[in-house]
Amino acid sequence: MSIEKQKILIKGAHILSMDSKIGNLPVGDVLIEGTKITRVASGITTNDAEIIDATGMILMPGFTDAHRHCWQGTLRRLMPDVSDLMAYVNDVHFGLACHYRPEDVYLANLITALSAIDNGITTLVDASHNTRSYQHALAAVDALQESGIRALYAPGYPLGGDWEESFWPKGLEQLQKERFSDDGLLRMGIFTHMSTEHWNIARHLGVPIVTEFLGSQLSDVLKGLQQKGELGPDNIFNHCTGLSKEAWQIMSDSGVKVTVDPRSDAQYGLEEGVFAYQHAVDHGMKPGIGTDLETAYGGDMFTEMRVAFSLQRAFAQHKKFNGETKIIKPVTAMEILEAATINGTEIAGFGKVSGSITPGKSADLILIDTSAINLFPSNDAVGTVVHAADRSNVDTVMIAGKILKSGGRLVNANLVNLQNRAGESVRYLLEKSGYGKL
Image (cartoon, rainbow, N blue to C red; front, side, top):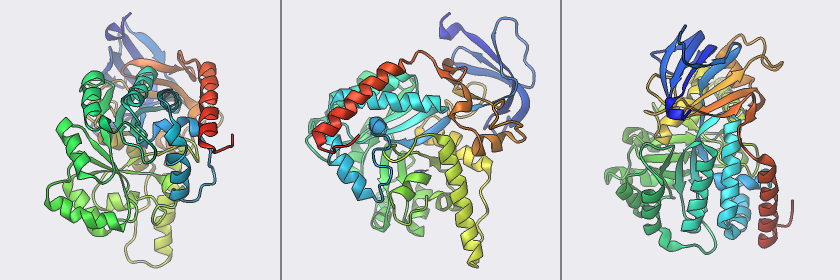
């Protein structure tokens, strides 16, 4: 049966819909027809649907990783003790990245995307700032498409080495025309640093602009950009550490979207070293959460949520203990879950398509099995997801109605072959760059 004609009924789950109108159902059913959700209710009866018994499971929208550099998927934990940004930039961007072939990008993106799916991440924002040629871009898109993940793919020019400079803008226009559509799983953006020239290219193409944004120097340029009408909802700013209060207000007033990175901001010592979640919510913004990259640590959203929760609580308590007059409200598990799901989906540009269990939206769903020893008894579903679950508890992952993980295992993924090819890629990159360690 084609996916367009399929009918699946998920029964008996604890539903975390992430839709304020539907709310959460302690026991509920979800009907999927084709690629979309058609009904959500406490009891659905149908005679012609495939039944998925979700008793004892939590059903929720998949996570959205709103900031990931997928091309670094083969460099996992290469530098677990890296202490600052420039050490990473020198080794990776001015070293290893310069030797990437299209096949190295393909393997890294495929590893990242499949691993994301395995961890319950159904949507990625891929900030691909090592797009050395049109062929490199095609390789990245091929891998994302093969994995079945939903993604905003944002190619960006490399920081070091030789690259095909004609890719900007001709290659971008060709790539958009050949490989992307408004209704597909993959959409195109542009990853660029603070360059209004490149922002103009993105706006000519009508695609989102993803930018690494941090520090007082960049804060100072925002006022001028605002006055010139250069800021808007198509801007996605990552990190946002070390910004002034005025900069935050300008971003909020301009509709800029913000992604925060709990682990990387601390790991790489970005400005004050504390992720900017609190600054964002203080200015009425709804930040997404990104894992950033895997060169130092893992790329799962479960760990990222726990770090985010703990850092915000620690930051709030620190201010309270020191007698500061402005009391920060401790974050809730639900607020963190929103950042990791619907907020990130809105940032990625898929908010009308996915990110919540809502009739009419795409069936981008995950089932978390609470029967494992690390989760039962599951007395609070939100707390279970945010504070206790991990990838081993992700039983099922569905994207646009297609099941990509079932019974705790990825479907149709040749991981042995992928592992062998990834090993060859890493050995090549280390040898060519002279990095010299495995």
